[in-house]
Structures are given as structure tokens and as C-alpha cells.
Length: 154
Image 1 (tube, rainbow, N blue to C red):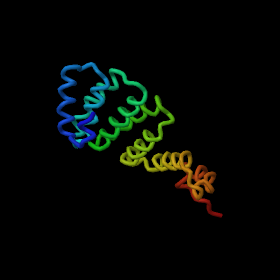
Image 2: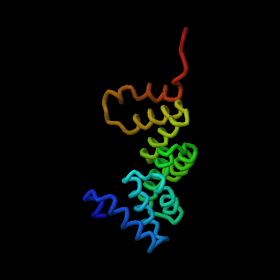
Image 3: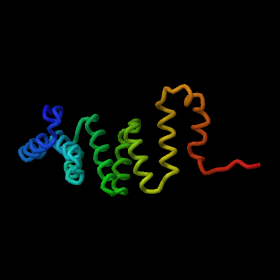
């Protein structure tokens, strides 16, 4: 993807569209084509290519990227329920992928599921940070992560 590395995103997209026409059943080319639409700001056009890449089958690394790309694209075009469904499937397949979880939390926010979004993000933070200050409060953050609306009043 030398064109992409040189910042020639439109040329890269045009080349990838030609490759998809020539090799419509190539999952990797579909995935790259979807990504190229996202890069040039034409998210809606990326959707069918992401869906096709996932359907055709990709290696695990690229499949995770395709789920993230499709879920994120649905979110950015306001299709929040579709985004939630895509992220749920991606996290089912890749439960340790923190990027999927983080983008899923954004979708939850858009769906006004703020409590679930915060819980997920707080758990991502405490499970991935090396920050000594945060780690010193790890147990408390974990405890409160699903109790943000509770009050402890005497």
C-alpha cells in the first residue's frame, strides 16, 4: 500500500476499487478498500466492503480491524444499533481486544447507555494502565465501575 504511505489516499482508493472489481471474493482486498474509503472521509461507501471482507473471512488480525472499522463506521454515520451489534460480535470473537471495547463504549455513549460505557472504559483503564497513581486506586475504581449512580449516605 505504497500510495497510502505517501499520502495519496484517493489514488489508493481508486486502485483498490479496481482490484475489488477484478477480485471480488478476496477478503483482504475488500478490507483494504473499505479502509481506503474511511481514510478519504467516505464512510458510507466503506460499509459494504467491510461487510464483504468479514463474510469472506480474514486472518484474525485483519478480522479484528474489520470489525472495528465496520462498527466505528456505523457509529460515525449514526447507525448506533448496527454499530453495537457489530462490536458485540467482534468482542465475542476477540474478548481481549481493548480497542474494540473502547470503540464499543463510544457507541454505548451514543445510545445513552452511559453507565455501561463508563464501566467498560474504567475497566479498560485499570486493566491496561501502568500509571502508578491509577494503579494505587485500582481496587476502588474496579469496585465503583458498575456503581456510579449509587450513593452511600448514613
